[in-house]
Image (cartoon, rainbow, N blue to C red; front, side, top):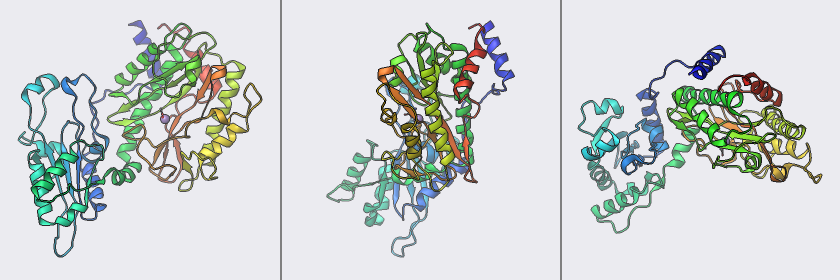
Length: 454
Ligand code: GLY
Ligand code: MN
């Protein structure tokens, strides 16, 4: 317990401890309604039906709400459906905007395993959902058939998630109900939610900042107190998970990557089962999710607290590439995740050119060949928020800049990953500014933790 007291005191002195948090930090209902109205506006008079995620049998595997469903409703319970009807003023078939949340009937036996749920008959459910209308799920096919019977042209303007297993049976039953031979072929509604999700509102930015702050704290605790020869990679992941959860986060935003030595060169390494050795490099790509919003942070540190000259050289090149990309950034012009690395507006090109013109491998060859992935990705409800890359970076967007060099021959992998917001003025804001960036800062943070009991 001495350890926890020391930790709490140090965190408080760093101004890093958070006030107690409520279980789930949800944006006000009006925010979700505005998103549904925005989606309806892009339906061109069509109808969208989205499905929530299903809870696994007996809850043995973790449940997480479908990202688009959450974005549009804030509803976190499983098994629901959302119908949005787009307004049309067409004289023959005018329709007003309409939204209905369909909820499955409660299953009292399953609730003994997975907890109490709401259904359409639960008192106060409409208020809890913040949706105009809440109906039992049994009404979904009836409601859809009614709309299509009144206007069969709607068959060509149906939208749903391509991955939702419920969509095909619903549509084929509807075709039967309408006496139509062929099941309608729906459009992909995620192509409409994607651009909406890319521009974050202030509330979303606040949630991402909470995820970032808890992730920064865990990264700092990692480098200051946990990394040393003899420690396992998995123990590092465990210690970071404890910090995230103490700070109100519900889960890691992806499987923690804690790769020492040769494992630092494996991009999505997740076994985390090696014991770290003196002289190893350690790549820690690990961050958490706060109230459904992700952070994504990587730091690379020396296991014994001191970079070797070669580790420091490669680290400085990766950092230089990140800084070159940051310097080149122009809102509304720069792009990210351009695998061709030829377009001068692409930050990938800038970072690649930096890496390829600094340093050499053991055979005197340039280092560009050792960077294998895109420079970054959109981030939000998903750690990799949906996007058609390359994306032009605009105000309200949140994304990562994460150059890396991975040289298996030298058992040396370095990635530095920070999360950025383009603010309203088009300025780039580093959400991980509170975390060491340079090799010197990392060594200083590791030194500061030495001698503190664990
Ligand atoms: N942090 C893992 C990734 O971005 O792929
Ligand atoms: Mn990433």
